Length: 253
Length: 253
DNA sequence: TATTGTGAAACCTTTCACAGCG
DNA sequence: CGCTGTGAAAGGTTTCACAATA
Image 1 (cartoon, helix red, strand yellow):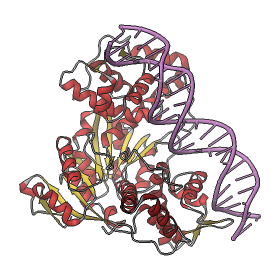
Image 2 (cartoon, chains in turn blue, brown, yellow, green):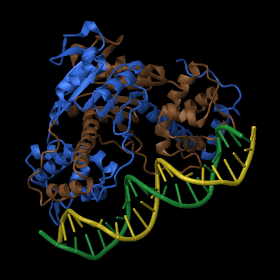
Image 3 (tube, rainbow over the protein chains, first blue to last red):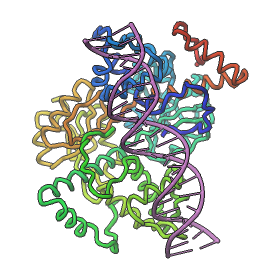
Image 4 (cartoon, each protein chain N blue to C red):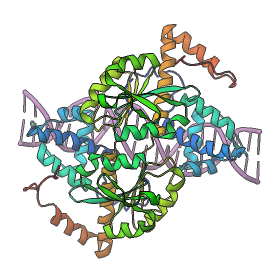
């Protein structure tokens, strides 16, 4: 995920691993909660528990940012909040546009977490002329015709796509054409973008399918445990999947 | 993500890598599209392009499932659709409940991708008594009081949490108590679950923060490119991460 | 003394490159 | 001949375990 820019200049030591970057927001959230409770310092053990990771990983992650802790004591909460915010680029304001104001787009527009961390919903855009002018989450919806102008007028570099799958690539192309270089895609489709543009995708159906895989595995193990591992496994093996032949009706739709 | 179950029994060769599992839904989607266009076979190169990965990765992924291709020809589309569906556990029907019918919950209930792939929204649950009985996406909302009964009556093992962060852990505990063993969490909070329960999280704010990180980095590199890479990089090196002090404004906006 | 910061080991994932096969 | 399937190499991530130190 989040590919683009394959030819990293491999510049110096500043390469924070992607896995670490993906966890920084988690740490930041936990730290913000501590900060609100006026907790002055926190150990890697405590913070890791709050963020749902283990402490070795957290310390390693922080080591990429610098030496911000104090041995024997822990980390200064406020200081870390600032350092991580800066590292993530949250000390500045990021205007974002949301394209596709259906159920999901509207939910996103209303989502408080957006505004709270440096992101500002600069505009809502939809292709339906009937929606134009209607306010959603207090922001008037604008028509797709004006997409390029809206992007440029607001200096938007981050776009959120919440359109139907069929419209996503076209919307993506127009966003990129107008200068957007980061896209959060909720449409269940693969987006093609030029180098230098980052795409992250959120796909509800994919997440559920991954859960189903594990759920199925659990059910299998359970059954196996009930009746002697090898026997049960073998039984299901043959019952459920014949040699192959008759591909039974593949999913309704 | 999706931790839980640390003590994998390491059963036989059936251990499909997690990274592969996460891509199977992607392949499945691409294959389904081909199937609808009645394309009979597809090469790893073509399918990989459609799924947005490279062909070596795809072939390696498929090799964990078995030898389902034909050298010199490619893969049989229908057959692969069936094999992947089965591997993911989509040949059976998974009843899911959605808890928290706010904007997001309603959007999820209306999301077509749910129903289309073996998942059936068995119930919608909300804590607001005023919502009880109201239909959302054609399904009447039920009150949280009945959560346990609903889970059991419907044999639900997958739950979706779309409540505010403050309610999520409590809802999670009740879901797990009632027998749910897979949770898709949209609330921006860390969920604690017992071993054997899988949690996957979808967090809009985290995705945006990751994009912001890369966006910021691009802005920095751009600036560097303007003025002679090495020199600029060296300059930023010393300016930006001195002791800490003055963080130079990166990118006007 | 309690806790960080980090080399080194273990593990997982991706990519390469080509033998094997239809 | 063309394309799959896969060992082996390369690269990335997590965990271990302990020296360094406030």
